[in-house]
Structure formats: C-alpha cells, structure tokens
Length: 113
Length: 110
Image (cartoon, rainbow over all chains, first blue to last red; front, side, top):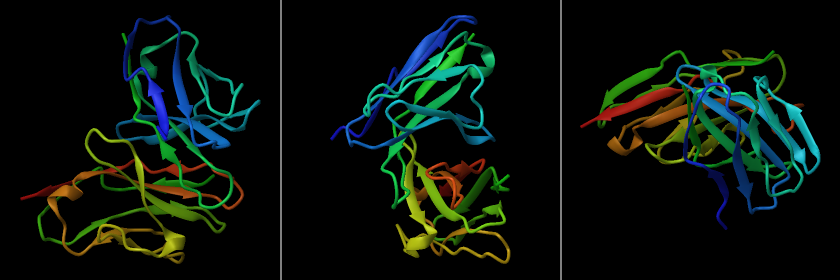
C-alpha cells in the first residue's frame, strides 16, 4: 500500500491563480480530511469527507473547495489564491469507528506571492 | 467550543534529561486525547492515544480530567526524539474530527 499520497510536493502560485492539490489513499478509508499547518497555529481543519459524495466544512473552509467522487480521491481546490493561503497542506484518512487514528500524507508546501 | 493549548512553542533539553511536553484542553464532555509527532522531513504520525495507556518510544501520557491536561513525558530524552509534537482532541460526538494544539518543537541536545 502506498498509504496517503499528495501531489505536488511544492507549488508556487501568483495571487489570483487557481489550482488543485491532489490527495489519494489506497486503504479504502471512508474518512478523509484536509488540514493546513501554520507556525504557531498547529493544524487546522479545512474540509472533510465521511464518504464518497459527502463533504463538509471544517474550521477554516473559506477560499477552498472539495469534492469526493470516489473513495480514493479527495482533491482540494484553491479558487483564487491569496498570500494568506501560503501554508503546508496535509491530507489525512482513516476508517470509521475505532481506532481513531488518522494517516497523514507527506504534505504540499504552497507559496502564494 | 473545544480547544487544545500547548503553552510551549519551543522546548530544549539535553540528552538523558527528563522531558515533559504540556497539553491542556478545554471541553466539558469526555474527550479522547492523542499525541502526534512529526520528525524532520517525515509525515505526521500518531505517537500514542490516552485510551491505550501505552508507552511508545519511552513516552507516556496520562489524561488528568481534573486538571484537563494530557502532558507527554519521557524520563530520559534521546537525540532522536527531536521533532514537532502535536496534542489533539476528539470529542465523543465529533466522529473523526480532531482539534490540534499549536505544536511544540522539541530539541534534544547532545
């Protein structure tokens, strides 16, 4: 199993550009989520999904869209990038129910200039 | 709303010294608490969870409901323990949603 994979590893965008961060898992996990990691603020939940076709907002959803058309994939879209979205983005997945352990991807470092 | 606080952003100790990473939480129900660790250039991974009452890599953490704390402790720190540590909380009704603290960067000096 590859676990949770994310692409790209690094990305630089100009303000106003759009892009999609890819996340895939091959563990047949129902639950997937996106976090952003910022110094001094820990990890904050952006969006999550409890299964294909079901998504919901987390703590900081503004400026981001998600969709879940398959169990495996959970892309995160930045509609119009802003410098405040400069961060490291982590995708995570887990099965429903016990144990509540999340498996994280390697992260995508995004810089918006 | 629930909240997790890690009061120390940076913590530096010498090899062989005891280490304690503090975690306090605010939540009125019965939470589940976790410690996650991120070593340099590696992905975030689960270190331990309070319900398991386990010791992983020499680390232990006890949930103190009276003080609403879940401090991570190790009696003798090793250089390979240097990493970013995150405390996280899951409400009993939140499914899989985790609330993370701000993180503590631990450096163990030789």
